[in-house]
Image (tube, rainbow, N blue to C red; front, top):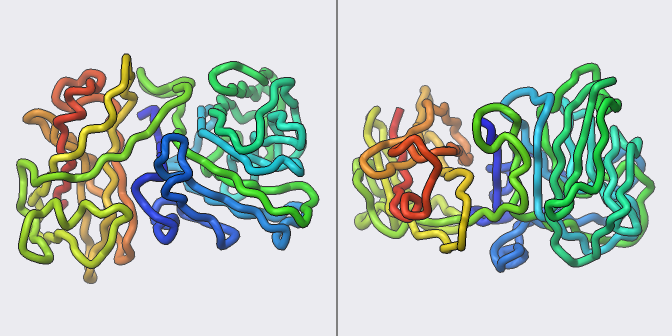
Length: 350
């Protein structure tokens, strides 16, 4: 798979951030339900000066990647309320230690840095309180490292055969969003806003390079689908117990029989002109409620074909599990708008 992660921040609330992002530092990170680029949700990472001393992380969220990545591509829609000091936009770490960062200075210019050492600064600049789409493609290496930074699709920084490696390892395994400061703090507060985030690598035949300014649309269940084999917590339609946004744990479906499935008819996403659908992701909030091993498979039903993940082991705390499908399992080809309009979200006890 080339597309490793994506998140539009539209399917969970502030209290659920740690269910999706494994670390949230600073205490005031939040999901703003109307802060996104098109009226949807966005991640807000504020900064207050109390935590801003040299080398200390400010308000950030981070996520462990499913492996070590030497070359990667990452993009996000970014808006800052203030450019009063040099600060990072997003960064990439090896087991908690920084490798490479993309940031913005007091003039609104973008920069690339290695563990705080600035490698290059763009001539182009961005404005405060305006969303821009920022992407980086980078290779981590002491001597043959490289990077290319794009602003709204245009290359503004690039270099090859440079040192992009800070640790003893030529890879990253964590991605971080938020104003992680390696610079002196101040007494002025500001907020970083994030929307439409993706991370991919260079493997596979699709989604293995810059995706450009993407949009991520969340859709939710509207009716019961082809399967209704799980047990509802209260009488009624199964979909009505799993359609809340953000999710709650007061009503749910449950199951203990391997092979049982539940599926749900979904809303249609917005119809766009000449759209390219890079992938479809099923995200489920789930837990096991007793001792012993339990797993689940998640995915979609498209046409008459089920596209399911491998078995995912569950813990006793509520967590999000996700499965990305870059092609339609019913055709093994790229997704079409019609196929997405008719897809069902699917879960199976494993």
